[in-house]
Structures are given as C-alpha cells and as structure tokens.
Length: 517
Image (cartoon, rainbow, N blue to C red; front, top):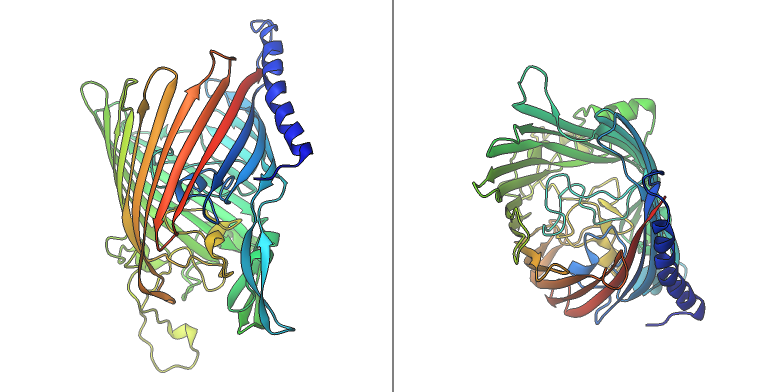
C-alpha cells in the first residue's frame, strides 16, 4: 500500500485534532448551550489479495471501500432531527480523501480496432454526503445526498434490501415523507402508515463513461431518479404485528447510446418534462420493457414480528422483486428474499441473528414478447418474461458508481473488468446468515457467512454455474478508556469460488466521535 507524505500528515492531523476538539467541548457549560452537531473523524485502512475487497467488506458501506486496498480519512459533521420537538432542523456533511487501488477495465479503441486497458478507481477526494432537512410534526423534507439503509431489514446482519440497501453512494435528491409510522384515523391505533417519495439526479456520468467498454450493449447518461414507499403496520404494542407494503424506484429522462461491435448504432433521448414526473409518480402501463415511463422496479415487502414474554423478538420477512407487471402479479415464482431474524432485548453474547434464503432464478420465465416491439407483426400474443433484474434495455443497470443500489448479493457492475456495464449474474440463488453480540461491555462482534450459485443472466448464461462462498468476522472495541469517543473496528473476510474468485483481506477503522456546542 502506497501513501504520499502529504496524506500521512493529513491522517495523523485528523486523528490528533479530534480528541483536542472533544476535550475543548467538555469545558463548555452544556446546560447553558444547545449542542449544534456531532462530528466523526475516522481513518480507514485495508488490503486484500484480489482485485477488489472481499464481498462482505465492500458491501453495504455506501460505496466507500470496494477496491483492493485503501487508506482513507473520513470526516463528517451531522446534526440530527429532534423527534420530540414539533419543529426541528438538521444537516449533514461528509467527505473522504486518500488512496484507493485502481482496477483494470477493458475498453474498445475503434481507430486501431483493438482492445485496450484503462485503470479506474475512486477519486483521491470525494464528497460523500451533504444535505439539509426539516421536520414539522410527523412530516420531514430532506434535500441533498444523505446515506440511507433499509427501512425493513437489519442493516448490520442482512444481505441487503432489494430496492434501497445502502450499498451504493447516496444519490442527490429531494425526499419527503413521514418520520415514522403514523396512526390512520378511525382505526383506534390498530393500523399505521409510513411513506416516502423522492426525486433526484444521477451524477455518475463520468464513472459510466470511464468504465464502459464501448463495444456492445448501451450507456445511458443524465438519468433522473425517483423512489417511493408505502408501508402499513398493525399495532406495534401488541405481541404480534405486521408490516406490509411496496417500494419502487425508477430511472427516467436522459439519453442512451447503443453500440454494436465497437460502433455506435443509434441514440435515444427520453423526456424529463413535468408530465413525465407525473407519470413516474402515477405509473401507466405502456408496454415493452418500458412498462412504466423509464426503468421502474420494486418489491413487495412483508415483515411479521412476535414479541416473546421476556421481550425478545422474532421476525419473519419477505421481499418479492418485480420489474414489470408480471412481477407485480407475482408470476415470478419463489423469487425474492426470505428471512428469519432474532433480536435480543438485553446485551449478551448473542444480541441478534439472521438467516436468509435468496432466489432470483425465475424472473417470470425466459420468454419475452411484445407485439409493439416489432411493428407490423401478425403475432398479437403478449408474453411477458425475462424480467432481467436490475438491468434494462434503455437505461443503465440499477447501480450508482458501479455499486448496486439494491441488494449486493447480485454482483455489481463495478466487478465486470471486461467493461460490461450491467449485472452479469442476476439469475442466482443462495443463502446468507449473520450473528452479532458482545464479548464484553467494550468489545462487540459481527459474523457473516453466505453462499451463492450464479447462472449468469437470460441473455448471457454461464456455460456452467459459478459458485461463491463468503465469510466475514468483525470485532469492535470501545476505546473510551483511552479517550472519550474513541473506538476501533477490525474486519477479516474471504471469498472462495469461481463467481467472485478467491480473495482474502482485512480492514481497520479507527474512529473518534465528539460533539460541537
């Protein structure tokens, strides 16, 4: 691992300044002044034997450490919303700087008519988060880039949400919704509702241009993004309760360039008018892969909870993916994420456990036929299949900076070193398990293990299935005995198999948290 002299100085300065700021804040009379914000200063180090970080180190961390090796400083300042106040405001900002390994990607050069190699990786400095938000009563409004995880699953132990998992960098957007579940009038507290809606703008054009092979498939630039969710929940004070609903996401607008055998064959531009914004919010069937305006996907979600007499909780949940009407109508077999979770009510050697089965092989069958796709055809039969999860014939794959916005279980496009910009193995199945707990008051742990069997996709099936076994062990140490707010976290992980390749690696994160008064 190589670090410049200047970067070493920056890392040491960040580590040394954080305790100094914290000690200074302790001298302020906290009773006389309101806390302005929380700050975090971290140094992240890691290395692995493969081209990229092991799957379980590089996943579900908002796209920060997916390369082979890294030495980064991470600084953030956050003021959270106060849910106890009628009106509250907040903000956040985070940036990272330092060294990340660059991987080699294939690219077609039309003039000499041959393949070339380009090295690509994260910038030496990037803005991870910047946002402002307000809350009035139970409604919030957020503008900017803010990291978000699953609204349904255990973020630390699960394999990841199918629609918004926290696996990719945040997307600039304006989002509004309910802070939490709200009672529906006239139900006497038995039924509650929670929902959100957002519109945003993809800003990964440069990434897509630099990683695409310009030989086959297509590249889309200038996409807009939309997300919406509506969940219903029964009375959570009862021993048994259910959360059920749907979440959807869409790309729309922008323009697409198509390539075949190294030559651009056509270009398509898509509307981003006010009417299009309306049609994305209220989907209308339009046929073909453009089932809705733009690329629309989502999941049916259900989570059941039972509270034991000792206050421990057991959950059973399901997320069913869909790409068009066939998936919405659940004509894609058993495809989805099926999970069980245990959550302890008290600290102990086991505080949580998750086991999940994942299957994405059906995809509404291998045949897709729309009469509108072939004008003038006498065949009027309509057959919808080949859902091709996270891929689309008009838009880029469902990813941001190469990392899946949905589940990382399906291998993200960033790992395709041949420059193929889509999900190469979205027909896959396997399992995932997670365990967390405390070794002592100061030391916690997390253990993840998973197995996957990939078949490729319906367009490009693997000659034979490829498999992968992944494992991660993580231990965290609350080092407040050395300095208040200081902690460290160590990760060790490996991949084994023909899908992701054999890889072993680890990471170390040292963090200092404090308050600004």
